[in-house]
Length: 271
Image (cartoon, rainbow, N blue to C red; front, side, top):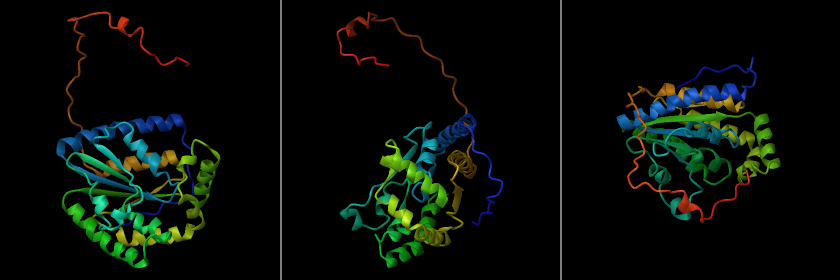
């Protein structure tokens, strides 16, 4: 599915934190409605997030999942494969994470590692890379034919913004944990990653599993645009809810339940 190219001209001003919080809350309310619908209908949904290091995948996923149940919205971020997993079929460890009825599985990086970091950094052969690109649309066609909804997002960050974010990680002790062994080498191979991206999109942008590209230089707008588009791709309805009433506390067996804690160890109240 080809998307209309967006102009970089007339880029809107940065969104204020207040405006962002207001719009995000509206979308998160809709995500809660979607969650109820997915459970009610037993839907199975996979959402794939891919993009360069520093593109904003983690923050976008957190914005999606912070107000919903982790038993419905399950995030999968697999580590590097073990020696045993390397001997398996390439897709095997990903297939084991696929959703059951009433689940949405979000892949923070996915089987497309083979089309990106593995290929660029030399962790797979050219033959393995070519074979993956050849077979991937067929495998995804089988997945969607079983009734699974497969949604794929590519977060596109500019060279300048990626450099700024990497410098922020290097200089901020609260962000240094985000620097993976692949982050800094990826800066030197920018165009290798661009070519790998182009080959991946050309091979796997299909009608049954299209790629949707999110411009992510502005993190706030990227998250809102991504969530809004995600909601537009799934037909859902708001389910009626039973009115909740707070029950009264029973006085049966009542006693002074604060007195029994007086000699226990409490955390010092420093704040």
